[in-house]
Structure formats: C-alpha cells, structure tokens
Length: 283
Image 1 (tube, rainbow, N blue to C red):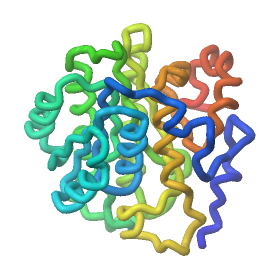
Image 2: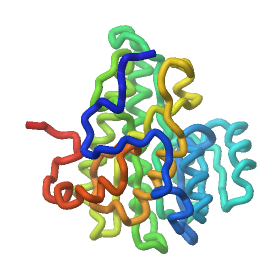
Image 3: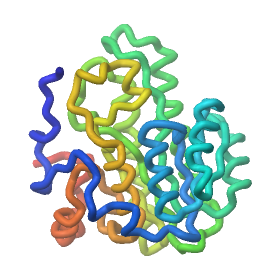
Image 4: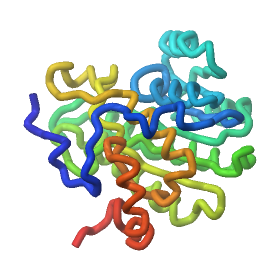
C-alpha cells in the first residue's frame, strides 16, 4: 500500500470525510425541472454523480464511449428521468448534436478523461501525451464553450463542475501527461471564472473527487493498494456545489472530503482572498 495518506495533506477545514454524510444527501436537494449532463457517466464517479442528481429529481443525461456500459447504466436508472448518448467528448460534432437534442442544460459535470499508461515520463508514448491534452484540456474547453452558448436554463444559472484530481498538488510519479493536462484545465477554469461570474448566472468549480476505486483506476492499481473512499461522497458533494449554497467557491479548487459547513464558515476569507483555494503562488 502506498505511504501517501490523503488525510495528512494540509487542508482548510478540520473534518475529512471518507464517505457521504447527512448534510449532502440527495434528500436535502430539489433538482426537479433541472437537467444535469454528466460526461463519462456509464460507471464509476460519473455514474454515481448521475444517480445522485436523478435521485434528487433532475433529468440526467449520461454520456459514454462504451455502448454496452452505457445501456447498462441507462437500465439501472430507468426509474428516473434519464437520457443516454453514446459519444466521445473529443468528437466535437457529435457532442454539439447531443447538446442540441437535449436542449436547455443547468449543470455540466465534466468527468470523462483520458488516462494514459502509467510509467516513466521519458518513455511515455507521444501519442498518449497528445491524447491526454486533446481530451483533458481541448475537448473539455470546447464543451464549456458550447454550454455557455446554450440558452439560459430555467434555473437561470449555469453550473460547471470539473472533476479533477488531487494529483495537481502532489506531482505523483509516472502520471505526467494525466496530471499535467488536468492541471492545465484547472488553470483554464480559473480564467473562465474571472470572465463569467455568478452575477452573470454562471458558476464553475474544480473538485478532487477522492481516492475512488473505479474501472479506470483498476487498470493501474489494485483494490488492496490504497484505502479507497466511498464513490457516493463526490456524487453528493456535487449536489451541494450546484445548489447555490457554494457560489462563494466559484473558480476555486475543493476536495469532496472537506466538510461543507466548515467551508461555509470560511466564506468571508474565501471571498476576501482571491487566490485562496486556487492554483497560485503561495507565500
């Protein structure tokens, strides 16, 4: 098991959650008459996010490149309002078609990502480096642009949730292209946050979902190699982020493990200190 203990990494709050808790359960939120589109949502974190929004009353749109897994996810969610589309987020024309068919969208959760084969940076195949930035930066940026251009939803606010990784703070070995591309997109989200604000009915967040054992993670790590966390934690945390209660975190990078009420207690500082909870030079 790796020696890294995520609970020991400095954080702005005292409480570190490893599983969901009463404050952020779907029963606390009403997403009726709202639509949430989640990329990479046929399994793992994306599926859990889709299910959380569905349970809270939203119409959910699930996207995946894998038709079989997507159909299984759709069947699992058939008791709710769900639309399913086979698509790669790197296929710009297909994604625009999906957006046009869905119509108004309130919440865009960016979970799909390209994860290269882990290994030494100097032997990483160039095509995997290219694919990492093509999907994890360029394709995501195009999705956000398309989302911004859509008609204003009935909620009168558009929410983007970037599912990122704590790796942007840690520089773990053998993950250079993945972490570098994720870092680049977090920085891009910060730029978007300065140009589009909650006053203009737009909010954007970047979030570390946690140490979640997903099918993508299983390609490089074993189930017994780490103290994995509950996938429902980041899913329910997304409900809170999109609820309007977290607008003071617009443009910030947060961890799903951080207690939401303790974050709220820091609101004045977060609003006052522009670079707090952002990628910036710490002094």
